[in-house]
Image 1 (cartoon, helix red, strand yellow):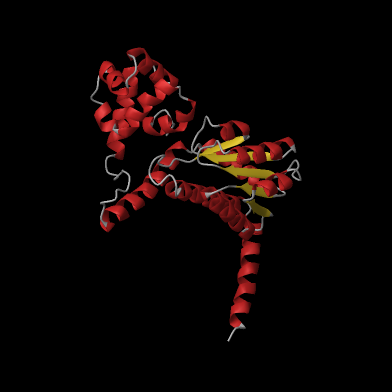
Image 2 (cartoon, rainbow, N blue to C red):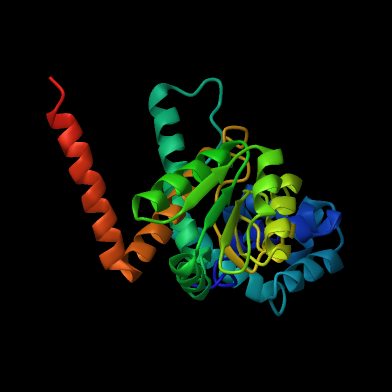
Length: 286
């Protein structure tokens, strides 16, 4: 399914590029999409504290013909997402509610990512990674966990992979890359300056670059040769990066499995050799 076919995901992806008045419209829609589908253009403009013309510009900025097409597709999106529980964890939530909100945030992130992730871009990334001489993963904060997981997963299938979660080391190692190498930058917002710098440095040195981010219009996505989009709740548990990390980890799993399938003989050989050595080590312990 394309981004245009899923209105809420499309809004989140393009949110950083919207003008302040257009963001007020986006905030109103994202806050209560089930309510917005019943509003007229004038009512939506009033609730967003903007003009009718701004609402029209907002719809066209998203790529729709006008307000009516926007509402039709939004209504379809609302029906599709109705079964999932959403919302911030509140101080008075009991443990059952907290459990449901946390799990549903992760489920929703995975579900939405399957919609925004372009198969052609994914295929191009797999082909590049399968042929790569060396692979770098760059991440900070919550994304550093995903970067380290990338190093572990790709090393297990016989790839020369390294994760760098220190900003100085990211640049120091990026300058050593060359044509035939691949650098993967991870950032939920796509606006983390240090990750953008590392990816740009790797690109200037000849490496193919891949961005993993929530936002197609972000600087990271525009800098990289290939952009792989994830989708996570921009408000729920933002400080912990819970849902974004789940989406990133699952995407890295997908890339690693696909690369292993592409070069099955090499991957199986390395996996079997590592398993054999680890088995012998375990057997020697008493």
